Image (cartoon, rainbow, N blue to C red; front, side, top):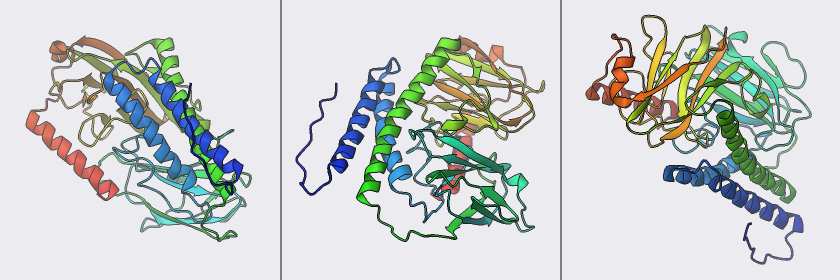
Length: 407
């Protein structure tokens, strides 16, 4: 039970504002209790990450609910998914995400330059995490837009049709989250897409939120934080009930569409658990997919650090064996091969594949073995990596990510 108590506030403050504040704090306290009382706090690092997750959700909630002004939109980059600070919801290390928050009844002009990356798309969601009746508004692939010879583009997003590049908005949705996924295979050399946005028919010129609007947004943050903890704990429980640990399970397409997942992606995930003297051999065929990758997350579905650790690999980074398959080793120790997945400090966590625009869904196989036997379970021509080469690979990863985010 919560033991929260509250100080006196001025009589001039509306009761609804105090109620919203108390609701927000109560939700955050309940989210913390749900996490810490769960079976997923087995290791001290899990408890520490649980506390990090709760505090991060409060900051994240401010960024996606309180801060945005839907009639004064920009594409956010440093307040949503960041390599260290915001790993909520297992964002892909390969995607340079940008988010804008729109009013579906308005008309927006979007422009920029396509850059040079393997694939990019917009996805619009009506509402965000914790919102009642969140739903997908639409997906738009940049391959389907007219891009000029110099890479420039212009797009209209509106409820009414427009000639040229057009994205249909839902006029009933007053909080549309427009997500840009820009996929990078070569972190050092891919040229990111650039994008800007403006409202063409702004009617509200007030920057400051009203008291009632602040109350509504504060309640949304609390609701989102509690919902997020419960959602991912249930996902863990369901996954263990279905296949246990160290076994991949493929989701049905569209299974998570209404909670921010992409209907064009197949998500294949596994809860892993290993000890320092163990390793997992992950083996899979490669389907004909526009984009694919594997990444590691903690048990709270926060993306594991990928700047200073090789905790993810994509089609441009992984070494493919001569038989067309890819084999990876997930282990707490470095096995001295190219395709190592480093879980960092997490003996238990989540491994997740993404197959985007794939001709079929492939479920990798997994074999747990003693770490000392790793190389006997891999093809003889497996690409080796020395400690010096590993440091060079990690240095290149850091440089690529710092370049992407302007650090």
